[in-house]
Length: 212
Image (cartoon, rainbow, N blue to C red; front, side):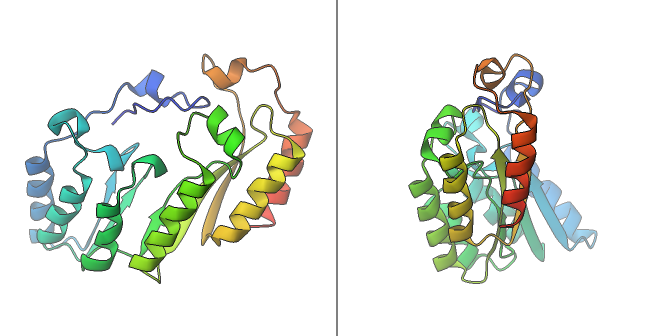
């Protein structure tokens, strides 16, 4: 639960606190109990599953969680949500080797503009993101990738919207969740002076929907 990332538009760290991981042994035991009860599919949930264990073990151990749940005998395994800056090659590689891990991943990009990504405090670039999906498709060619994208973030220009549109076309997402930027009280983005007009946000949302 919780999040340590403090994206400039997001209120989650303020209302849910910092990341807190459950012990790996507890997760494995629960997965075994579900498998023994006949459960076929488990979805692992967290605000940022890729950083699982950093607070308990001093380093992310999400790959170990995936292996443990797979070993419990679950037939189908999914997880959400992944922050691109924390998605490791080790986790990506498991899409090619774990029998239960389904070929589907939700990987929110939020913008295709590096300047906007920086203003959002996402701490990755569009080039880094493209590298991740290249690795994912190499590991699992049939993987279905979905994403979240925000239009109308403060200061977003028409040129930056076009960057995001082109980026999403290039990525070829199976599904896109499109959000018009909405200020959250006391977040850095809410205090930015160059807020985008709501009519313009509506227009940009429709343009993005045409790509989805």
